Length: 79
Length: 237
Image 1 (cartoon, rainbow over the protein chains, first blue to last red):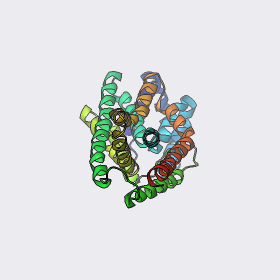
Image 2: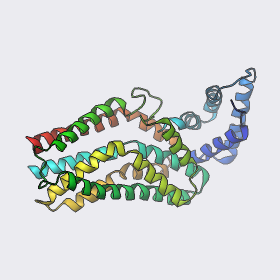
Image 3: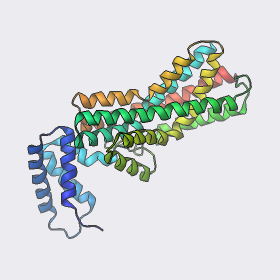
Image 4: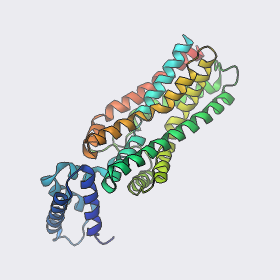
């Protein structure tokens, strides 16, 4: 069990966004919105698994940029 | 006819080398992270060193394979009635079956392209791809991913080296074949590199890789099987 590292998640998502070619201002805006929305969805749970977090953030990211959501969801399933 | 069989075996081996998915997968991840962290110019330099790493290891392995195949098939380069030839045929048939059913961890899944390699190794390659900083890191990652493919490529290197040496006794194209064989594994990397440069991203590339999963499995499997059949028909019978 480990504490949730929100700045690290944000950094990784912004890196993915930059790699995909999303302008940094827009990326910061919807990454922050997605993390906030996912946190509020999961706030009722005392214990959150990696998969719960991934699902919630993917669901939020899909609203703004489907490719970024796809990369976030699948980058561990490439090799 | 023997030369044609040799050329056929070498070309099929090139097809297999170009269809393998570990090096392109690592390269796609590495380039994605590189353009996320650095300028396109630096990412391009790093990718050049990655490709150089895979190529140099390919060349070194191939040179070693020449030595090994010369030692194994020393009896005038004609492996007729040689028990080792039957062992290699067995390996190729086994690889053909294994690649058809076990090359991808979830062969029928439309969500991933996870390969049947130890998960620790996959995570290690993934985290290395993420933390590339210098050209030497990229070079080592390229070399490492090439070495990780050895369980499939090693018998190919040996049999291709044997066929090229066999060709040498009657035909002149052996040097050209050697160079083409070494370059074959670079084709998907160059394709990926230009796909990224032309504006495609990891998501679109990964969707294409998922779509092509069945094609890659069957190509690799049928190529291995055809190599085994060619060896039986032209080197044994």
